[in-house]
Image (tube, rainbow, N blue to C red; front, side, top):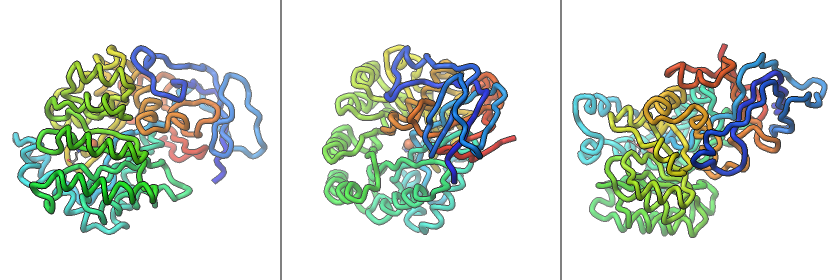
Length: 414
Ligand code: NIG
Ligand code: FE
């Protein structure tokens, strides 16, 4: 792979900076109408309206005025898992609730059983298939969570699968791994949640840290899963060990998750369908990225998170898919754009910031990715059109013509 590329005659559109953009700042994008981008060795070396130096033999693309954006960062997924759960989807359509299925021993524990049985190769092949689909929709970085092992060996297996996928020099996306051992209470620890949290803190986090298998630690902080106190204990310990911290917060009921994220200065709080006013203020004041997952609200028939209000209150909002086998078996970037703009009332500009720079910030990588600027990674998306309004307007349809990863053209959707 050469990792060198020149794209000229593009309508370059990008947020700028190396930290999350908050509140009104989310709406501000830099536009260069007739711009060029040069990438050398995978890194952006030129962005502007002039002519970059061309090394002989460097591949060149004439964008013919089409929109060029930073590669999309899907900052919340569970993409390594065994099995599928279509039955649960049908039960929900018939009136069952996500939590009642989980309380009956289905849900996450159902996928845990399949993931414990699956071989590394099976998990890798399946994750790669998702990655190819995502790459065609413009994703160049994806966060991936463990959380379907709920014991040492299988949590490690999930994280090792992500490490192996990242080791491929021709990879289509980079995976940022997150440890989600506190996704559900495993049957082996029934009635002993404190002991399970002790196990994660004492036996799992140090080994994961030492082996560099995950960058972040996450918890499902929710009524009937892990309490605010248990989540605080786990995340505070993880932060002390140097992990970035993230929470599944206020997804099903108002539970104080957003407030806890503010208190702990978490990188992100995710879902937030039922975040309180106080929680929104806490996230805005403490630079917590509010990661909204509209596909999950859509598939669970739940009300959407208050995205507009969060931005108006000064929050940095990111958008992600939540791809997982249970609550949301979709990694659709096009539908995420549409739902965010139609139902959460984000502007298209805000939605672009949310899926690029703010997604990068939510995974602690905004210094390297998330915008088209010199020194950042050569991860780009070219649309079919000369306006980015097609992103929500082509509802649920792919507006991406070309994906560039580390300076290599990965996909041309013609
Ligand atoms: O983000 N809510 C918790 N975790 C996932 C669902 C996982 C599953 O159902 O398998 C979520 O929605
Ligand atoms: Fe999730």
